[in-house]
Image 1 (cartoon, rainbow, N blue to C red):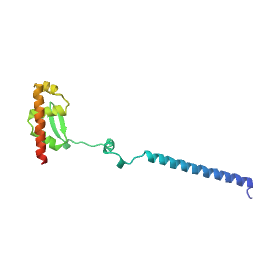
Image 2: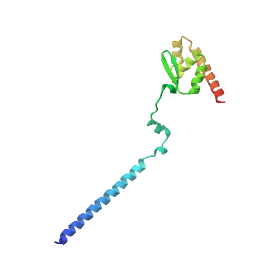
Image 3: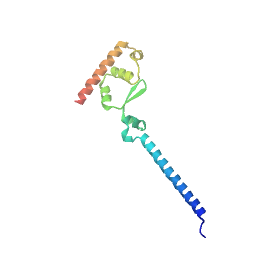
Image 4: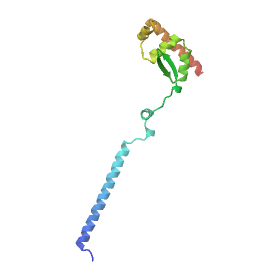
Length: 140
């Protein structure tokens, strides 16, 4: 039995509506992809600072030199700096470690070591000069 012309018309209209809906969805999807592409950035295009925020680095005790002050261990990862610190006299090394790694002021260090603040300042400045000289000699 042949379908009536009314039934064929309805089928054709339904077919048209389905194709139109699929085409509209396809267009919407490509618009969505276009909007995403405008906001997305490749890892190669962003700076190292931002990439490093998503990274983690394992640290091991063999990766740094350890200095101990008042039962507190301070790890130095730079081999040249740790070698330069080892060459310093004990008092200068202790003052530099307290100042730069323990964030203590000259006054706090003076109180801790029973020294004058000016003496701590002189030891710190002469220690830095010795480290600078040592590093310049090593780099040549």
